[in-house]
Image (tube, rainbow, N blue to C red; front, top):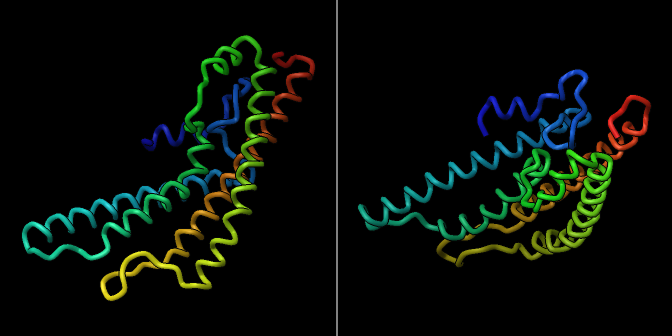
Length: 198
């Protein structure tokens, strides 16, 4: 996302204009900055992976000495990157979804559109919490048994940091779902006031 589009995503609606949905609007307590920072960290992680993979290719083909553990690090990193960027992906409305109906309702039945968004975000919150609770025990067990990927004597990487990042990403995404649902309900309640668009 370019700097200009990022500023537009974080900018509040213009005065007198009612937001059509909660995506891209600033979150309470400046939490959108936290989500953006995690997204940026995930992007830097991708760049680091690109450098590592290229070093492995050059070392393998030019020096006959590949970088150890690249395969394992890439497989772990993919999971970490996804969960680091999950919250900001939701906040900016870039989750994969079929929005043909919602786009039509946004123009013709904005109150129903808000209701469906609030329902979607509430269900998302519940699902994230369920997955979060189910992911706690594997993290504890991973630390206890010192779980790792790789081979003894060659390359070993602990699993618990990625599991911890997964929990962090799930927590942030659950928080984002909850805040979006709250914003949807506030906007829906505002439509019932005199002078509001129904």
